Length: 253
Image 1: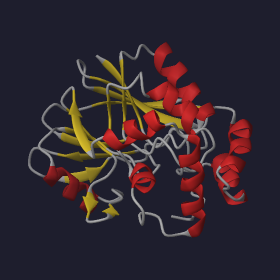
Image 2: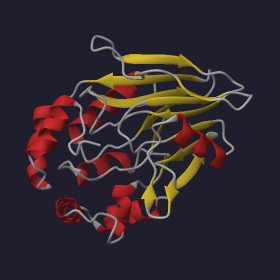
Image 3: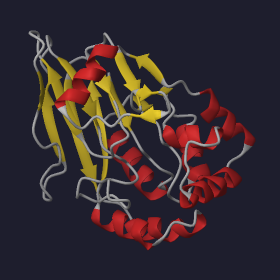
Image 4: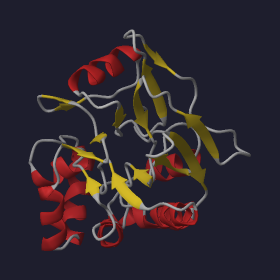
């Protein structure tokens, strides 16, 4: 089965529509999400209208946690953004988000936004942090989000953890394809649909074939200008528009 695995949609309707159209054209038979469906961008309700009937597996991210619990975000800008997001969502949509687990397993794949330590959502960006995540879960295929950057870590049969190079394709290429090794464990970050931060503004997602054990990390353009217009609905400043144009972090992390 070919599965489309999305993460960090962040209410970017234009990016989500482009990703879903591409996944369908690539033969996706199922759709999974790694959290942060909402936040930052201006179309949370429209994105959830597309995702809720489509996803066969999904988890909460820190933005869902911030919607449901006070104190997750302390920066006034983010608190205001989340209040505006909440006002755009229906009761049914809020319940769907609140019912999402922090982690789940679908088709043998472990799905999570990021490991949590107390209230802290860990960013998996090094072999040390990847080794910590590998130690928490027995599944051989872990899919995580949160960093907004595509990444691939491998733990070999003898326990060596390594990062497998840059997972951002060249500007004239729309994907990186990897044949996974059956005896190794992998931690895979598909990147962000709605707010990439790896220097490539194209929307990112992954396709994983459960039968052939192959991974495609795909990138595709979308209407960034229209997405930027929606930022006014959540009150985000110009730095967030610049981030969508450049594929970089609006906060410098």
